[in-house]
Image (tube, rainbow, N blue to C red; front, side):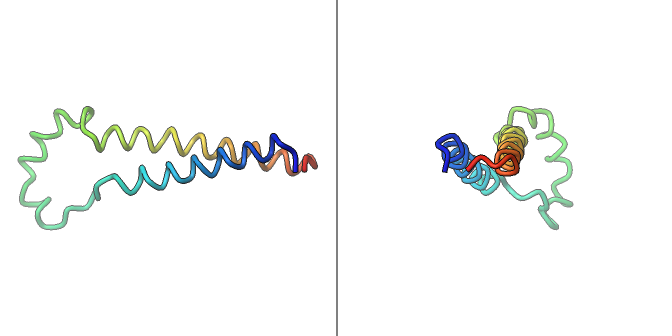
Length: 84
């Protein structure tokens, strides 16, 4: 195997693990009955929603997922080109 292919594969593995951890740290979106009852508190809390930990994790999820997709495409192109 080519050294570049090994390095990109290891980086993709680390990005995949980071993506899994980021998703697991996020809180669930469905709150059931407590979400329906506490609608007023939710609207009050939505003012600082952009600064909350969940918002930061959601933003980070998008970026890490984009990096994962790009690395996957790079690896696919390398394998298709016959770089082994």
